Every structure is written in C-alpha cells, then in structure tokens.
Amino acid sequence: MNLLKSIYLLLSSLALVFVAKLDTYGLYLLIALFWSISAFNKSLTKYAIWSIIIFMTGFAAMRILRILTIGVSDFSSFVILVGEILITLIGIWLVNYKKSPN
Image (cartoon, rainbow, N blue to C red; front, side, top):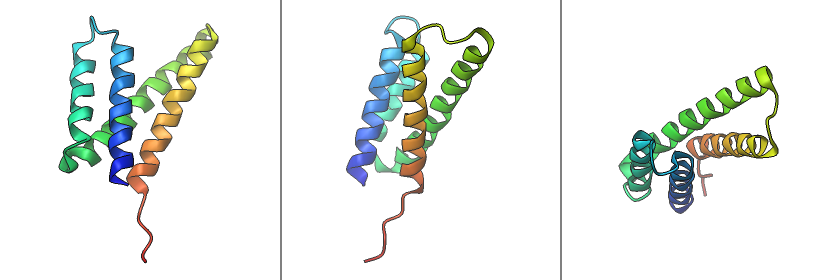
C-alpha cells in the first residue's frame, strides 16, 4: 500500500506541475514539491494525501460552478473535471484503506 500511496503522490504532483504551466504558479510548484517529497517521507504521506483531496475538491468545485454558470466550454474541461473527481476519490480511498487482519 505504501508503494501505491507513493505513486499517487508522484502522479498528483506531476498533474499539478502540468496545471501550473511552469511559469506563473510558484505556489503550485511548491505544493507539487511537497507531494513529491512526501512520496518518500512516510511521516508526511497522510498530510500530503489530505492536501491533494482538499486541493482537487476545490478545483472540481470551481469547475462545476463554472459549468453551471456558463456551460461546458469544451470537452477538455469535462475530462479535467472527471480527472479531478477521480483523484479526489482515490485519495479518499487511500486515506480510509485499512489492511484486513490476517
């Protein structure tokens, strides 16, 4: 499960770097760096996953609000919304996952 959490953190940080467009979103890059470091520092993993859940939920909520007010502007916006929701749900699953007793 730790490997899965590390992969989740690294992929989420890559997604955030893509969103940041590498030029004007220094805070996004800092958060992505935190997520990447957390993939290898197990004491930070839980906090990083929670921050991903909160971050992506906020993005999805803003995108849903935009869709409700002005409609779906293009197919890529809808695909990004689905991705944000999936990332949030995977994070919630990782936080709540408990190993079954053997």
